[in-house]
Length: 259
Image (tube, rainbow, N blue to C red; front, side, top):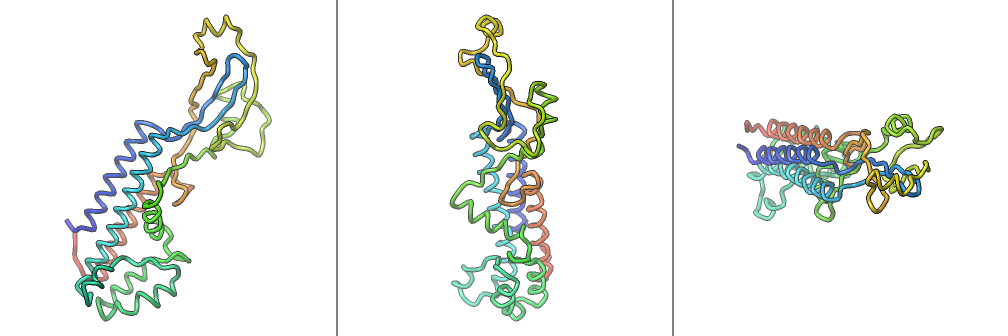
């Protein structure tokens, strides 16, 4: 199989690995904490560091393979037209700041070296940040970012509201308006009747007197650096589909029939 498509297949394998990781454990959850001795209750977000860090590594692997896939495709289309070994070593899929930069610095030499169709194919992908294909640019930008720091996924708690919490925790405070859950240590704190020592002993409350309970509320895992409105699995699949489409467009423009 062509090397560019092999890189896409590797990205798909990593995405499947990420999906399985999320089935085994959740990077983020929303919890109810009860201090049985003082009667203080609180809701809060909690991150599983091990799962979140493992997810970050896998996400980085997905993005790296997608960036490499596009580079492989661009190399396959252009390397035989390079004028020197040094030029050949510097071949990579171009990402520019503006359409003007693409047209001034990249496209002019392509018709004579490869073909006008290839230049048109590259232009159709809009690989520039200002008004261009932002998801395509994100593959490059986040791959670079991953070389310096982990792309930690984030929990989206915006779909949690007080009515939802009251169904699960009947004594949750009423009358909360214009507010929502967040990625905080404590979002809402209130008090209920504390338990006596006898009651705590009978209920086998731990020595800390603290009980944590995960609440069954929607907490989507997102990658805020790409698209905070979509679940991480969905947006990564879109990036994979975009990469495959970009490869097909480049190969078609270069007159290459590659599977």
